[in-house]
Length: 116
Image (cartoon, rainbow, N blue to C red; front, side, top):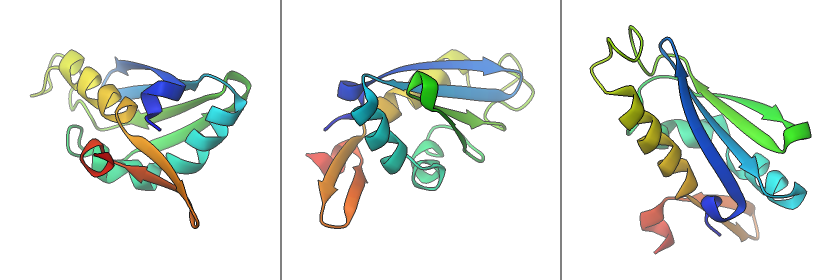
């Protein structure tokens, strides 16, 4: 199942940090996202469009996962070599376009190319 089918996303920036938040449609979807979307799994994928580390924060009361990329926009959105708004959109759409698949080993995360 595609992440965008079970969650809504938003992106924002503050200084040189990029903030990506996914809000699950229900508790079952939140549990799937929480298990599949770890910072370790997402860092190589997000580093295709956004440099630096990926930090994940769980917001269970909101059924949300917040991913903070503290070095995404060096010098802030206006000083960065990459336009912030376009990076934000690319990063959040990359997350929303991922697929989660369940198998005998648990949940797997698939890129759009792998899911086809």
